[in-house]
Length: 216
Ligand code: FES
Ligand code: FES
Image (cartoon, rainbow, N blue to C red; front, side, top):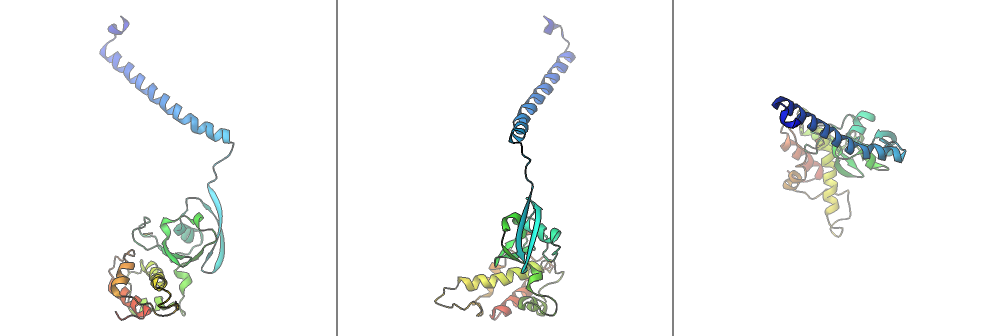
């Protein structure tokens, strides 16, 4: 028998050849349907989308790769670098902006999901000479050290006070401009998604409680 006449080395080579040819066959069969589907559809995958939204009160239009996060659209396309990228995984809050008045981690949401939305970044809250009350309070209370987390902290804290006001039943108060009734514990809990590596937490809470009209 021919097989019996093969040396162990020849047998080993034959077996290796068989494994290689089997792997190639599997790869080829799994690739065929994808290639065939792409050809039969006759269309290229559309990787970019045109979007329009309002950023800090200004109408902006962009063509972005569908995978672009809102954070990267703001920083890389619109050059609004006040919004910071910390973890890029939804864990630090440095990228917090407001979308239609609600805070979001802009690293966790795609830009193409925000067609027609109103986005507010730290640049839209105030500027030197006319700071937003929360920005002024952070300065007054030294609510930062390196400042990297600060834009996210401020956007988040502005939205937090609105959240608290909105949660108060309307029969108690319908005036959303009135000071929010808020405790330090609640502020700490609601701000827990915004991490400060410098540990400026007590000063941040002081700033928020001042704007909220609550005694720290
Ligand atoms: Fe978005 Fe950290 S950069 S949560
Ligand atoms: Fe440095 Fe918060 S001020 S991380």
